[in-house]
Length: 486
Ligand SMILES: Nc1nc2c(ncn2[C@@H]2O[C@H](COP(=O)(O)OP(=O)(O)OP(=O)(O)O)[C@@H](O)[C@H]2O)c(=O)[nH]1
Ligand SMILES: [Ca+2]
Image (tube, rainbow, N blue to C red; front, side, top):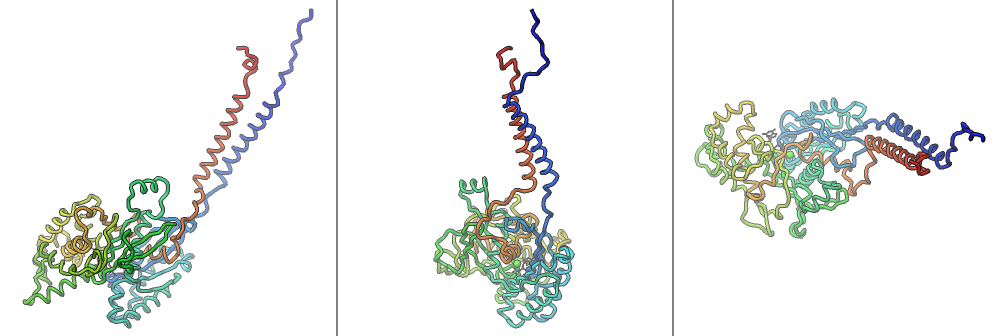
């Protein structure tokens, strides 16, 4: 009997296996190609940075701010940031009412500094704006001609700088309040909420925006979202549609209630009521020279209180001087002199203090004799130092007696100088508005970032390969298993 022939031919591969093998091979090649292209070829676009300049011509001094943002993201919230601030030497531009020609010249040094920060090939396309506040509002009321001359002088200087001049004007108190509110909410990221933040906010039903309290030298502003009936004092209400959401915002600016003007008002009253040649002032340290300081906080608070007329209110509720104030709502960011003073007194809310603790801290500071204060803080400008007692008492009077903050809602005030790298103030909001960088409607979802794109490609490729390997293992059972032989 012939032995069965052992032939050398391999068992034939099934069609399914062949197709799977080819598919697997091609997919592995495709995955390798995808990863290579994603990692090597798809580099992020070169960063295209834009710049903008705003000059804040305040009553006490002028500040120049340079902002920058990535061109391709200009409609996102929170992308514009301050990269430079330059404090102009000398007084605010309203201080040049008798020397109007030189108002513009005072800005030259800071404009040069801005030229150094912004790449020269972008100077021409960089917009520059100047907004003047309460000092110029007052000058314009007193002497319109001088105010116009000051503005012409600063305009001439700004036009001669290599930037794109967009205007120099006096902004209204309402604008100042509104832009300050826009700035802080933009920087805090309150306008556009996505995912979890949105859900959290709706669950907690908290106010989504923060109110803004600005204390300048000549005026002070209070601005916050109010749900109250709009009919009471329509002139105090502003309507915004930002990132697809409507906001009804209450704002008021008190001219002459900035801290320098308030001090002048108070000293003028002191002079009227005194019979002797020297003024005995409870708001200055005992032994100070130009006014005879008494260092008496309680007496100081009482004399400041007279600045706020609370006798008549034609509305359901008022702050002072018959000005409508709806019930305070939400948290507040307090900046400018609110911050300078409270920061000096170590009373900012990094570690929150109760209202009575704040009052007693101001009281003990006021009680210290001037020579002792000068010695302890010799590095601080004497003008600022000499006024911290008055300023602390004034801030407490304005917030407590003026706006009626109390020990319950005091913790809702957050004294802040900067948010990230940007100063809290009206200038950023002003620029965002004038450059149309805050859209009324929510922009479409942004495209994937370069990093996420590469990550996604790699992930997809790995999943594809793993699926194929798994499929191969499932379909490609060893022959013995297929025949049921173990
Ligand atoms: N302690 C301290 N006070 C400051 C500082 N900078 C400004 N001030 C004072 O704080 C007050 C408010 O300053 P700003 O917010 O710059 O006021 P402004 O913009 O000139 O004035 P408005 O036109 O009324 O807004 C003024 O009395 C300034 O003299 C600072 O760095 N430290
Ligand atoms: Ca100001």
